[in-house]
Length: 248
Length: 192
Image (cartoon, chains in turn orange, blue):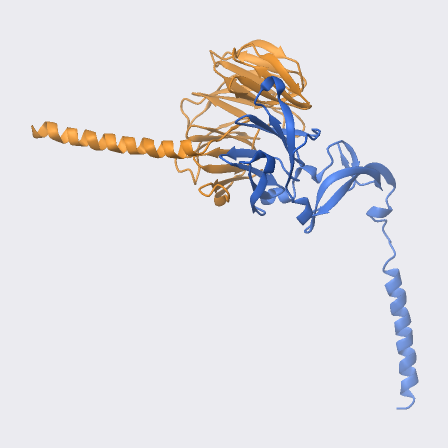
């Protein structure tokens, strides 16, 4: 009998702990709503902290008093940082020397856990499940890497592996909706890829309604950052964007 | 002793004269300086005192987009940074009828993120928190000064946006650049 009682007690204890952890998580998530950023950004909010990258620093601000952020941490990083992208428990830093991955298990003090070096370049990042999509721009200010879409396998988060490179003209921001990837290529249009097989994307179409800088897939609408304003597409069928409106 | 005085006075007079001459010549330029260089047509910085440049104002009318920057979607709104100038607010409640509704003037602005009722952005090297719970009356609620030291020297308008000659600039304690105007300037810096 005793043998059965002890596991039962343990089970109850475990359930209570589990419930409690859920409640806590829900409390922090439900009370405050964040929006969605484009992929080119140096500010991001996760776990009630604001993470900011400047050229050589990663800084962390506590938002426990949301009206008055307080700096709680700064890392001096020895590389030129371009962008920051949060995914699950990680921060992905696009830098001019590679893709750096930080764990935010301890949200107030991110720790470097993985990196994929590449030639000097600029690069926003988006992440889907176990795949990281990075665009590298090759311009005088960004460096000599071949411009294109770089796809990394991040199944082992500590050791990202470059799987595929697709040359693209002047790529910038990018975004994912379901199995569709949108890549902004400035005046060369916006490339729409099917990424069902993430390591061999197929180009579905190129949209040419503007000079595309960045995108946000948002509630069935694709918000495009255009040199002249904003372009909106209906993406209820993500592979077939339908132009809704150009805001100049 | 009685003879000493006039001699001394004469000496002093001479010294004073030499000193005056030296003082005058100190203004002479033996090497042509920046401002005596040949003039060219280019961009001249517009400075504003830090206090007035860092004022944050919400104007509930549309402003033209000058230099498109980062974008952010929050609820029914889209925010678009106008690099160095501020943030455009777009009403996206009906996407087919989406339109600009206002502009938040934030000089030195580049970044944006939002959580709950608060928009976080930068103004030069400061982290700024803006209460957006009442969209018609957005207001600044806190400012963390010089928390991004790199941005004090490297803010968007430190150089003009277009290529060509521009008047060289440097860090100033009491003022920042809020814009550029065309003028005849000494041939100095050049942007490719």
